[in-house]
Image (cartoon, rainbow, N blue to C red; front, side, top):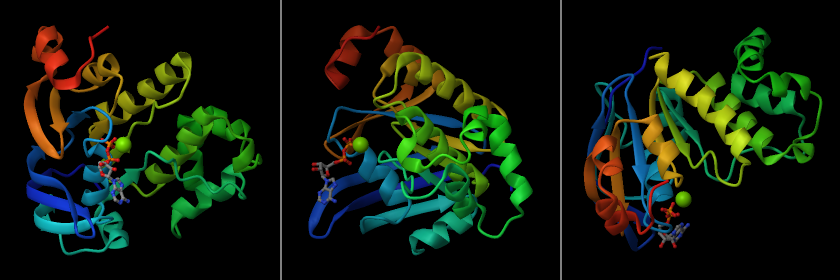
Length: 237
Ligand SMILES: Nc1ncnc2c1ncn2[C@@H]1O[C@H](COP(=O)(O)OP(=O)(O)O)[C@@H](O)[C@H]1O
Ligand SMILES: [Mg+2]
């Protein structure tokens, strides 16, 4: 499946009776990249989870290409082409690397594992290791690799670099950029490391208390420390 356009219109969502997100509207063209920034606790994870149908819907629409997926359950959204790598890294600790990957195949031939082993040689080396034995970086690779096996049209990444050593961050970002550049996937990246986030995508969106407070080009943010400070409360670089 080729990359698809992601369009979110006036999305509102929360948990039960609690509202977290309101009036969220944005679009990412097919094969495009978007970076989502914001301080801790502003709703970044809730946004990605809401795109997957994992929160309480309170209004608005999510469209994947021509298809309105708003009414679909999580598994159906995944089948429709949304791939999600959660901040918690979905690794089954009792299973080996390869067994974890099997769960992402969903009936596709085992030979497809070779494509992700080629992308992540480290996982190939550790294919018989248990999920529990993996480093944070390896767990992140595994979580990402398993999602990629589902051949998503839109890939949602929630702070993939969190807690990883800088050299591992470099390697992982390189892989993510390659994926995005292939044009086979539309990618939405939530990231706290501003420099890396801005390197990843030109289109940037900043969330504050469940709302979009800034949308624009990363270059603008890079050039305006005061703006970054006011939006994110941290300096760049
Ligand atoms: N399962 C949940 N139930 C209720 N509130 C939640 C839940 N998960 C997160 N929240 C709340 O939603 C808000 C946004 O959290 P989150 O989306 O995780 O922020 P971020 O990813 O930007 O750090 C926070 O106030 C958080 O406490
Ligand atoms: Mg989060």
